[in-house]
Amino acid sequence: MTEAIVTGALEAEHVSVRFGGLRALEDITLSLARGELLGLIGPNGAGKSTLINALSGFEAPVEGTIRLEGRSLAGLQPHEVSRAGVARTFQAVRLFRGLSVLENVAAGLVLRRASRRAAVGRAQEILDWMGLGPKADLIAGTLPYGDERRIGIARALATEPRYLLLDEPAAGSNEDEIGELVATIARIRTDFGCGVLVVEHNMALIMTLCERIHVIDGGRTIAIGTPLEVQRDPAVRRAYLGEDEE
Ligand SMILES: Nc1ncnc2c1ncn2[C@@H]1O[C@H](COP(=O)(O)OP(=O)(O)OP(=O)(O)O)[C@@H](O)[C@H]1O
Ligand SMILES: [Mg+2]
Image (cartoon, rainbow, N blue to C red; front, side):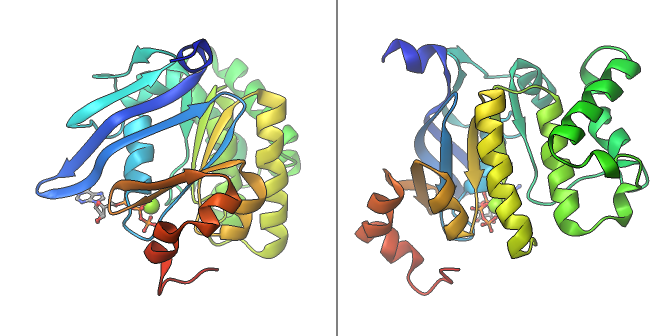
């Protein structure tokens, strides 16, 4: 392995995850480098969220290793993986609906370090950076769905990750919101130097944003390549046959 991979990547090496008899992931090897925008696609039930769960400490592989900059994450709890520099969002947004936007973003930080004042300051900075500053005091449960998803991203970013895993960030968003989201994710890479893994069914978003795409189906890797390579790949076409292309 080259030094760049050892020192600056979040990696899954031959990872398998099972739920009883179901092989949700089978021998997955994936690398997310710092500063990279990597797409992860595949049909419904392919194992995308399970892979995010494995990379963020929410699911323990039965085989294989998750490594952060060379160090195995085996046995670490999700909050420990978060503290080590890996943040993730959830496919189903989990906000405290009765709390303000600011409190929601600060909550993750209060759990992991520092004073409440520092957490609130950091949360406000991130909200301003995302253009959500004016909404800081609104109650999260009253906001449109697209905003909820952006707050989920803000909450993840506030933990100052080096690697950010986004599970369907565009779901439920309209065209304008998706355009903003693409710009925001691109800025996350440049302003924070994060490696960003994006799981999305919105192919236009993935193809615009990502320089490399990892495709899984039935828990297995079926292709890795540039957007063009992946779109032309016969195995990928077969996997999506009969599916909405969006
Ligand atoms: N906690 C669990 N217990 C049992 N089976 C699970 C669990 N989580 C996921 N699965 C199963 O594992 C497989 C992969 O699920 P996963 O949620 O990772 O797919 P996905 O690619 O994220 O799909 P989608 O595009 O619908 O979000 C599916 O067959 C799913 O039903
Ligand atoms: Mg999923």
